[in-house]
Length: 97
Image (cartoon, rainbow, N blue to C red; front, side, top):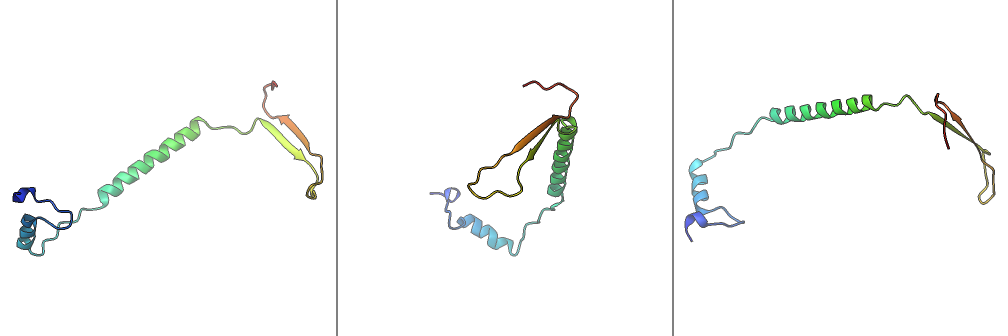
């Protein structure tokens, strides 16, 4: 096996060990976080703008049908009770079925 084919998950190759020892206390330059922050901010603004456009495009003026339930304030467990339901049309259209 040649030096270029050395592969071990537990240690560096002999060539890498030689390079590391010759570099001394070399530390790679750390990249700035600003490009990542900028990209995330742009993605957030695009998502927020898309949500606002969707909310504006498909907004509702409110419910078109009103429902109200009328019944006793308290009911004991297992005791039958009556419940009244009333509905109303809040739109200007005629409801069918």
